[in-house]
Structures are given as C-alpha cells and as structure tokens.
Length: 145
Image 1 (cartoon, one colour):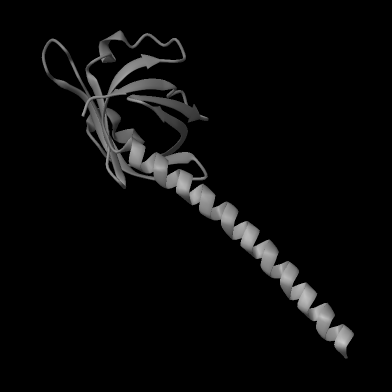
Image 2: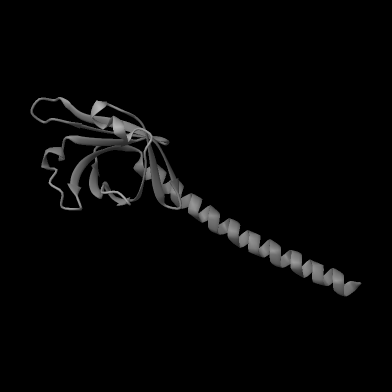
C-alpha cells in the first residue's frame, strides 16, 4: 500500500511540474505579447516598403495608429489633402503575431472590410518594422508621437 501511495505521489509531482513548466512558458509568451502591444501604441508615419514597391507618394503621407485594441491607417494626397484611403479595425497579438481585422473603410478600400491579416512586428527605439505573413505589407514606420 505504501508503494501505491508513493507511486501516486510521484505521478502527481511529475504532473504538477509539467503543468508548472507549461504555465511558465505561456506566461512568458503573454508577457512578450503585452510588451509588443504597449510598444505599438501610438502614431506612426510610413517610411519605406521592404519589397521594393514604388510608394514614394506614401512617404510622409501615410499614417498608422494603434491603441490597445484598435488600429487605423490613412493616406492623403500631399498636393490636395484629399484622402486616398482610410481604414482600420481591431487587432490582437498571439505568440508574437499581430493579427488585424479590418472593420471599416472608405470606398477606396471597402473591399478590405472583414479581412484578416497577420504580421510580425518589431519595435526598436522609434522604428516599427512590419513583415506581412502571406501578404505584401512589409514596411518600416517611424513613431511620430
């Protein structure tokens, strides 16, 4: 009877240790996600496209903002001030991946409403490097607030 009790205790101990390790790993991921979320909050101005796409008209005229749960992006014509596009929605961060869902848009980008896109994003100092996952939006942004 003592062996069964000892054996059961050992099983419980091993189970407890494995669950503790798993919980610790999950907590670390959550902590990194929270750090990234805090680092994203603010307003960013577009600087460069890492795919070599010619978007010179966007430099200095495309602005992206993040709050704790929402994002939006705007671009205007530098000569007329006319809005070229404006859309936004919600985002979440899971295991370091930023997942955006477009909830609203003007007529130029209304086809994006309901779409979801994923990115890796890294913030260093005042620079945001965004790399699209299965999308073309590989970009560099500079914090302006």
